[in-house]
Image (cartoon, rainbow over all chains, first blue to last red; front, side, top):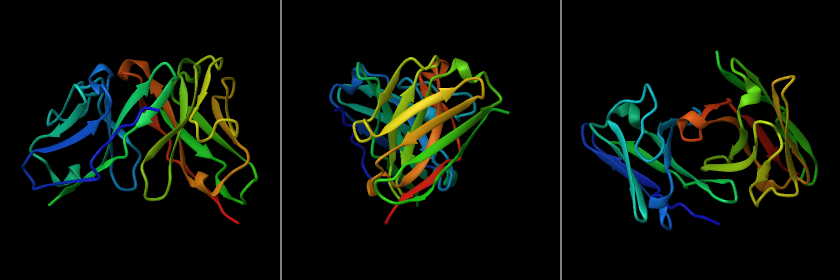
Amino acid sequence: SYVLTQPPSVSVAPGQTARITCGGDNIGSKPVHWYQQRPGQTPVVVIYDDSDRPSGIPERFSGSNSGKTATLTISRVEAGDEADYYCQVWDNPSYHVIFGGGTKLTVL
Amino acid sequence: QVELLESGGGVVQPGRSLRLSCAASGFTFSSYPMHWVRQAPGKGLEWVTLISSDGSNKHYADSVKGRFTISRDDSDNTLFLQMNSLRTEDTAVYYCAREDGDLGNTFDIWGQGTMVTVSS
């Protein structure tokens, strides 16, 4: 089955830029979605279809996807961005949903 | 207010069964595909199963296929997960989630989760 690979952790200082990667075989051909899960809370979509932002998500969040890697970029990182981030794709034609293992973002 | 509320979790011995429910409110439940997603303690998200909006199509993760059954009652706006032959590795918080076709078929609404502990 399809596998998504994320780094377990990323650390960044406030105000800097965080980049969280999600690797998969030919992932550039699939729409990639990103979820933020703050401690004790349920996941929230921050990016869908590679680079679209739901309403209410700050412009500091952006996404890209090409080749074997999708990337979630968080600019001007704030303390409130500290959370676990998960990438997600659909594995067609099985209609299975695949999550990456998650990346813990730490704001130093 | 759009809301999902799970119930039915608890502690159960390996090999036994449990049935989870997810009550939906604030939206037209019958219009949406629905999913169950679980999260083991301290671990990541794992998709479990999906049911189409009309209930005719169901898909399962390999880890639960043949043991878990998803169903829905649109007259009562409720989603179910029948879990049989439970294993210790099924221990997790179980979330029901709504799939939104307008948001790239992502999970835009999540319940607060219900904890299932499988232990002897």
